[in-house]
Image (cartoon, rainbow, N blue to C red; front, side, top):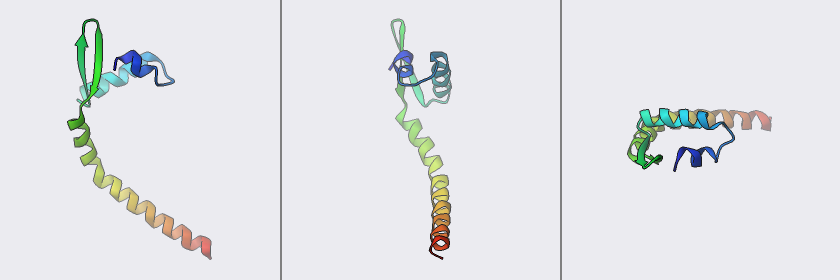
Length: 79
């Protein structure tokens, strides 16, 4: 998608979206392909998987913590 097409999906200024696209491109989460005057952005699935794999242990840790809190709250509510 082009920056304009992406920006059309958000309630924010196009320069803000462009800045985010620039950061995501620098982090290699997006790839840029220039076709004439237009730049199309594509998701870099391999890099996204790398980030997801890095985050997974932390997600599991927080899920476990929230589950423990939920169990404590259920016990507290039943009293």
